[in-house]
Structure formats: structure tokens, C-alpha cells
Image: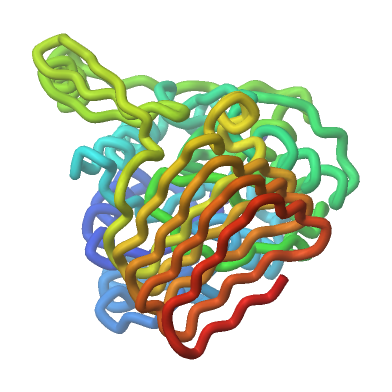
Length: 380
């Protein structure tokens, strides 16, 4: 493959990370590329910083949905890809559960931490389809909806076979133009990129399915993913791994694991109080497939104390011998199609302008629904 111009696409959601990204872009000095920046709200300071770095940078405002995936699709849909040989896809990434930028730093450092690192990776794209951090190359498992039923639904909508493949978690990578052209041809903007206010690290959206499709299409076109690794013996990542063995709190499937000085104990992660504003809680059939089928929705108790939450039990889930208590204002409960509810209690206290919506074909047995304030709407 003869290297031509690189298309650099950056989505900025966290504007406080612009300086970090511009510093990494210095690894492209001397390389021919076009720079496009998307964001959900125009920011004069961000514009000035990018234009000071590259006077030819172009900007586009996009809708606030689909994380970094939807803005990328909007951008490539409007760009003539023929003059490019590869695409560098970048975006800002929030802190992880340990209040660090380890995910972001790992993705960027291994891809373009220095000029030499990026040049080496650019050389790899002559042979490989995708290049990204080796540690973030991930296998599709059977526990999450974006790997099973949601993935299959999206593949059916766009007319491709739902084959499983590895992918680069975090979608910060260098890609051959053939893969991006194929993504563009699939017209993925037709899909439902519903706005969701979800915590960093939470999955189960169409955007997460598209994250996997990059790997699927890479395989379909006959290419492999190259994992770049610049790890040093005493790198920040190595130190973090040691610290996690001393003390850490991690979620895995239905359990929360606490590690203190090498001793690990577990607790059911769904038995907790949810505090804060504007949270979305999704209980889905395939998100924790084994957990839901065998025991997850049996004997579950969730207490909501914050405001503006959406509690959504997605289609085909089962929910038995369980209790959902809402103790604060302006929360919605949406129970989707074909959910099996048996011997369940829903208590809504001091909840103004709330919505309790149970959609068609849902089975209700031995239910108790208690509404304790004004402006109540119950749709069954």
C-alpha cells in the first residue's frame, strides 16, 4: 500500500484534554495529514488551540449521542475518502474507576506516544488493517448485549453476517482506508444512537456494537489487528497493577471484588443504593446472561435516592421476588416488552412528575405498585 495523506478525526467531549491531544499530535510532524475536529458544543478556546497548532484544522458541531462513534460516522459520511490511505481516529476519554487516565494514556502512548512510535505504527498499517494498543485488543464475550443480541440485531439491520472478532476497546486507532470506506458504505447513521447518560465504562449501546464492527470488517477484508506495546519495566501502568494488588475495587459480572493486601472478597454488586443525579440503570437479558437467568433478578433490591434517574428493565428480562424503591424526585421506570414480573414490589416515594411505564406483552404476577405523591403517571 502506497502511503498517501492521513485523515485525522478527533472528537472532543472533555475540552480540558485538548492540550494533551495536541501534544500527542506532534508525533505526526513531517507527515501529510488533514485534521478534522468534532464537538457537541462550540468552544472558542478549543478552536484557537487547534488552529494555533494547525491553521488548516476544520471543525464540525454534532449531536450529543453515540459517544465518539456517532460523530466519527457523521464526519466520514461527508468526507471524500479517496485521497487518504489511512485514518487516525482519536477522542477524549474520561478518568477510570481509579480516578486515573490510564485507559486514555495507554491507548495514546502505544499508538503515538512519540514520533518514532507513530512512524513505526504507520509502517505496520501497510500490512495490518488496524493498529492500536496491544493491551486494549479485546475478544467479544457472551456476557454483554453488544456482543450477542444487540450485535446480532445491528448486523441484521445493516445486512452483514454477525461474525465474532477481536476489536480495539476504546476506539482510538490507526485504520486502513478500506475498513473506513466499508464502514461508510454500511450507512450506519440509519441506526438508533439513542442519547444515554451513562457512566464511563458502561456498555450496551449501538455505539459499542460499532466499536466491535471495526474488528469484524478488518477480518472480513482479510486483515489482522496489530497490537503496539511500548511498556517500560517501571511504567505508570506497571505501578498501577502493583497498587491494585495492594488495594482495589473492581466490578466483574454480577460481583464487586475488594482486594486488600492480596486478599480478595466479593459482594453482590446489585445490592446497593444508587445516589446522584441523572443516572440510567439498565437491566437487560444478555448484559449478565447467566446472572439474570439463574439468580440476578430473583431477590434483588434497588434503592434510588437521587433525582432524575431512569430505571429501565429491557425486553425479555425476568424480574422475580424483587423490590425497587424510589425515594426521590423526577425518576422514570420503563419496563419494556416481554418482561416477566412475578411477586415484585415497586414503591415510589415523594416522586413528582414520575413515569411508570410497563409496555406490551409484559407478564405481571403478584405485583404491588405503590405511588405516594401527586402528578403520577402509570401506563400499563
